[in-house]
View 1: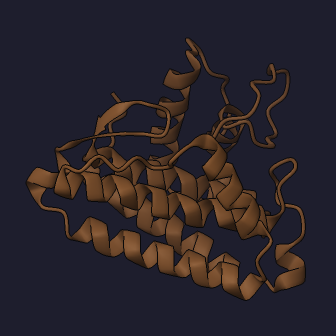
View 2 (view 1 turned 90 degrees about the vertical axis):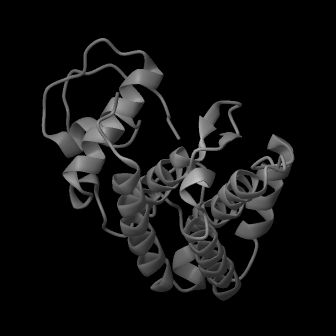
View 3 (view 1 turned 180 degrees about the vertical axis):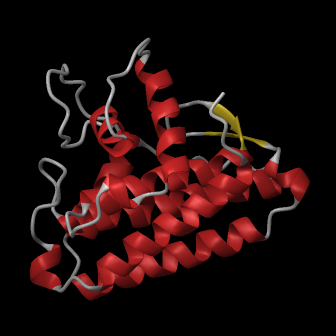
Length: 208
């Protein structure tokens, strides 16, 4: 039990989207081509991934609304190919894709009825979940990757309630009985496999 609500997730997705889009808009082609905080990825890779994720979650929203099975991605290879091709775009084209994908996802989610939100969809990892999980999936992506852009946003800039829900989520997925003590933003960064200030803790490896 995470303690989060559907309303919480919608709010956090909107907050994280605002952070990510605002930061991306400040990047020119040179700065967007610079490395992100994710090993092996430039900021262009990261922006392409977040844009493609919006399109993919839009497929799940369509599935919830129509009942027609529309997976997030046609295949893992196609997902990777979309990111690589997006990373080769000029910054202005990549930003246009991001903004349009964000707009379409927002409009699509707003169009879902209360019944639609309870319809079952399947994530890219093969988990069957109610459509109410879609905003949470998006909140994780935009909030964490806003930090990964490496433009100054840190986990300390994210809402405490979001961080607490994220800790619960990651702890469950990693199967951790205990987590280290420390400031909530630093504990969250550690569990997410991001740079942190905690001392004497084992490396958990990447997540998300």
